[in-house]
Image (cartoon, rainbow, N blue to C red; front, side, top):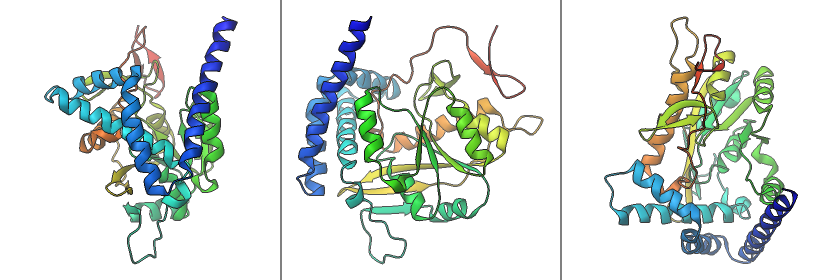
Length: 318
C-alpha cells in the first residue's frame, strides 16, 4: 500500500509539473491570446482522458433528445471552459477590471448590483451559493469591490500540488477559503454566528448526502447549506458567472430565495436542498458547455438512504 501511495503522489507531482510549466508559458502571451490558446489546447487534449467518457455519458442522460454531434459539441465546450479557467488564474488581475463608477464597459459586467450592496450593508449573516460555472472565482472578487467579505467553502483538487498552487495564486481580495473536509460545517457555523457571510459551491456529489434529483436523476447532495439556513434563519442568495463572447464575463446575484418551510415554520432542509439543485440546473441549461460534466455527480453511495429528522439533522432510514 505504501508503494501505491508513493506512485500516486509521483503521478500527482508529474501532472502538476506539466500543468505549471504550461501556465508559465501562457504568462508570456497577452491575455486574450493566452485564454484563446488555452481553450483550443483543452479542446484538443480533453477528449484523450477517461473523464471525457464520463462527461459524454452524463450529457446523454441529461439531454436524451440531443444528437451525438450535439453532445460532443457541449463536451468540447466544457473542455474549452476548463482550459480557460486554468489559464485565468494567472491573468486574474488583468481580467477583473470592474469599476462601479466606470462609464464604459470592460471585461466584467455585474447583474444584481443592488443585492451585492444590500448584503455588504447588512450587519447579519448571509449565505451565497454558486456552482462550477464560467469562472466562479470572479464572484468573491466582485463581492470585495462592494465591501462584502465572504468565506468560501470549496472542495480542493485531489492533486495536492495543484491545490497548493491554487491557494498560493489566489488574490488577497478573493476572500478566505475553507476546504470541504471534516469539521468544515462547524467552521461555517462559527462564521455565521459572528455575523459573517459564507459562500458555498453546491453542485458536486456528497457521499451519503441527501437523496435529491438533478436533471431528473437521483443523486446525493450536501445538506449543510440548508441546515445552516435553518439554524441561523439567514438569507440565501444565488450567484453565478457566465462567459460572454470576447473573453468577457457576466456575474449575477439573484433575488434571495424564499425557502420552503415545514409546518412548524422552520426551514425544510430536504426541500431547500432540492431547490438549490433546481436553481443550478436552470443555470446549466442556459449554457451547458460552461459546467463540469466530467464529475461523477450521479454516483450513489452504498448503504442506507439519508433523511432529515425533526431536529433538522441527518439520519439513516431503518
